[in-house]
Structure formats: structure tokens, C-alpha cells
Length: 102
Image (cartoon, rainbow, N blue to C red; front, side, top):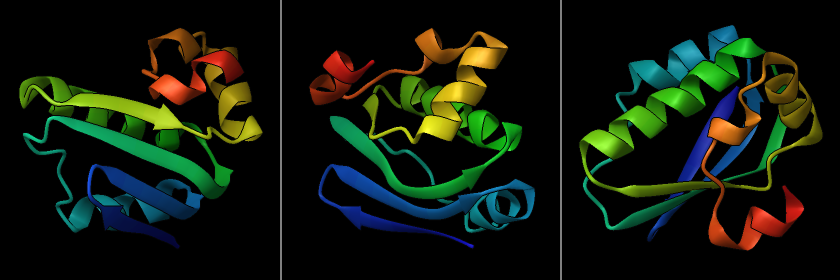
């Protein structure tokens, strides 16, 4: 199960980002809107699979379409490993305070 807590300018994601979890999340129609900037904090994410990367890139697409500056923070090691394996880690925008950790 995945949960997103929305605070001003920040989404706190917790739980798993597996196929069933992401499908349920997408069914909620949670969209990156036209906010100035949005940080998506993934510190609370436990398990991931390749669909997690698809979700992150979907949010990037939405952010670009709505002219929202999006950045990810606290990527879990298993997600970093998966993104590295697929050669897409450098395409994930990181929040400003996470650039040093990349």
C-alpha cells in the first residue's frame, strides 16, 4: 500500500511502489498541478519495482506540462539501484538539497 501526504510544496510518499500500489495511486487521479515547485520525498518508500520508475517519469511529464519545477528527494537505495540498472538515474530531477547525495 502506498500513501502520499501532501504539504505545501511537498509530497511525502510512504509504503511500496509496486504494480498494484501504483495502479491504486493512479486511480486516485493525483496530479502534479501548476504549483511553482514540488518536492517529492521518497524517504518512506520501502519496496519498488520498475513500475515505480514509470510513475516518477509520469510525474515529471505532468510537471513539465504544467510548468511546475519538480524534484525528488531521499530516493531509497533499491530505487537508485533499479534506475542505475536501466540507465535512467540521471533523468530523474533531484531536489536541490539532494544533488550532493546523487
